[in-house]
Each structure stands twice: as structure tokens, then as C-alpha cells.
Length: 463
Image (tube, rainbow, N blue to C red):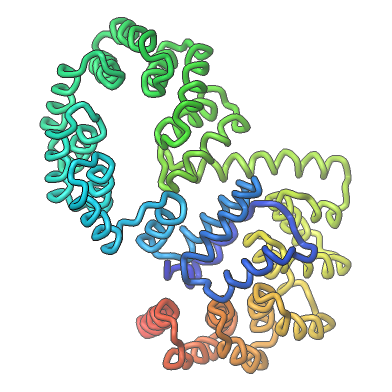
């Protein structure tokens, strides 16, 4: 979002500290991804590629915070959502994707899969009329396929037509009472009025369909309500294993462990499963906040244990958990020593965005003139991320004497460098810095940065 380039950027970035520490020379593959990230900072693909790199290596923590940083701090929501769907779901709801499906459907008009995917495109656009037409036609051709009935019910609900939504679900339940979905719908209808009968229906359904995840999930919910937590856990865990791609199941099983069992460690994998299926996953709270809370709680315990063991702060900086590194930097801020300069400077090349930012913020306030040669070298560093962070330190410390260096960054092709130079001028350069940044607007090629500069100009005028 454009707000990433406002003062709110600072608090957002600080919230995303997580992942594994990698401050040594980066392998060629990750170095290339980091360079692409810096070159095309406002494009979605480098963020998705970097996230998938971490996921492929089992580093779901860094993948989570990389994706959240892009989602909450850099990309507009529609751009992020489309890029995520293409990269992680193979779902393309663009005009091109729609036209391809329409052509395929023309060649194979009875295909339930094609009909479903086309309806999904219209639902994703809130194009209820076209979705309704596709779904009603598909129900006539495939009446037993609940995807179409469920889809129609959901869009009717979204339009405030609850009575009609409930009616078509009840009709399906009556027509297919012995199907897995039929048992689920019948149990749901009895949930509040007759829990005992609901349990009976669920048990009958599970006896017939022992691997139906929805029936098991409903049984888990009913058992939880009855405070039979062991039975609820068994049902939830099995349901989650049978429905690895269900956002609802994964997020609510996570909630069971987080809220009922008070066990963040066990909740975390389910929450992450849900998040990487849909970053908008929600149970009674968005799962992204649950994930952050769990990571920070884990790190807090470990950090305090190391402090109690009297481990030196410089050594804790090497911890593999960036949350702990962030806590260490906060402690260093309170008890600064000159010998911290070198290890903190090294963190400017850290893989985690929050650690990099916090290291730069600490350095800009703690170093003296003896740091100037290092700062000049950082402004020329091959690591584009370091160069960008050095801009904040330089403008903060040198003010107008830094503007020549900023002009060099503003002439670079890398979007991250131009972003950092402009942000540094506006945030750290005072009135002259803002004027210098605004003067760049006519030369700035990227629409996101042009939009930001126009917003900054309007804010200045209003102020």
C-alpha cells in the first residue's frame, strides 16, 4: 500500500520481525532473489518468489513474515490478492483467465470442474449475477455436487438473502440425506435445538463415511461445546489431516489448541496451514495476529532465559530467531556500548526485514563521526538492501550534506533504493529534505512512488 511510504511505515516494519538469522555471505540463489526483490520492490512477483523459496526449505516463519510485509506494507490489496492466488493457488481471476475458461467450457460445456472454476472467478469479483447464473445451471446438470449448492448459498448470504440461502441448503439435505454433506447439514440444523440428536446424526454419518473431514470437524465442535476436550481434539486432529486445504478446518483447529488447550506450539502449524491457504484466514480473529503473538511469546521466553543465564548481548545477536535478535537490539538501545557498532552493522544484511530496519534505526542514533567511512561504504554496497538502509542513517546524521548521495540512489533502477532515498529525505531530512524529495517527482518513473510523492505534496500543503 502507499501508506508503506508514510510515517506509518515505521511501525509496520517493526511488527514484522521474524525468520531465521542469516548474516553470513548469502548463497547465490538467495542473493539473486534478494537482488530481484530490491530491483522490483513494488511488483508482487519477487515477494511471492522469495516467500516460496522459504517455504520450499521448510522455513515457514520467514515465509510468513516476508509475505505479511508485502501484504500489509508494500502492495495494494487487490494486487497482492491476485498475485497470491496465481502463485499459490494457480487461480487466475483476470480477464485472460476468464476468457480461457470460457473457451474451454465452450469445448466441454458439461464439465463440472470448468463450471466451478468459472463461478469461482465471478465470486472472487463479487459479480453475483454471473456467478448465480453459472451455479444455477450447474446445479441442474450436477445436482449431487454440493460445491454448486454451497457456492450459491454463500453468494445469496453475501447479498443478504439468508432465507433463500437456508432454503436451498435444506432442499439439498432432503434430497441427499445419506450423503456426507447431507449428514453434516442435518447435524448443523440440530446443533442448537437438539445436541443429542445432532451427535447421533454425526455418529451415523461417520460410521458410513469415517474419513469425511467435515463430519469429524462438526463432531469436534460439538464435543468441545460439551467440554469433552479429549474427544474434540481427536476429531479435530483427524479432520485437519483429512482436509489439509480447508482454510476453515485448519484455522479453527488452530484456535482449539490456542484458546482451549492454551498451547501455542500446537496451534501454530494449523494457523500457518490456514494462512498459506488464505492470508485473510479468520476464526474469531485473523490468524496472522495469532501467528505473530505465538512467535513473539516463544521468543520472549527464550530471550529471558538467555538473559538470566547472563549470556552477552553480542552473542544473543547470533540467535537463529529474529524475534530474539529484535529483543536484543532493544536491550542494546538501553545499554549501548561502542563495541556493539560492528555486529549491529552486520545486521543490515540480515535476511529479516524487521531486524534490518531496527539495526539501522539503532545505528543512526548511536554512532558518531567515526562511523562516517563505514557509512560511505554502505552507501556503495553491492547489497542493495544495505544501501537503502544506509540512506536513513546518512540523512539523519548528515542532513543536507547527504543529498548528493540521495541523488545517486534516486538515479538507480532499483525501486527499493529510490523508495528508501525518498523515505529517508522525507522522514529524516526536515523541510529541506522534503523539498528535495518532492523535486524528484517529475523524474520518478514508477506510479507507486509518483503517487506517494503527490500525497506527500498534498499533506505538506494541508499542513
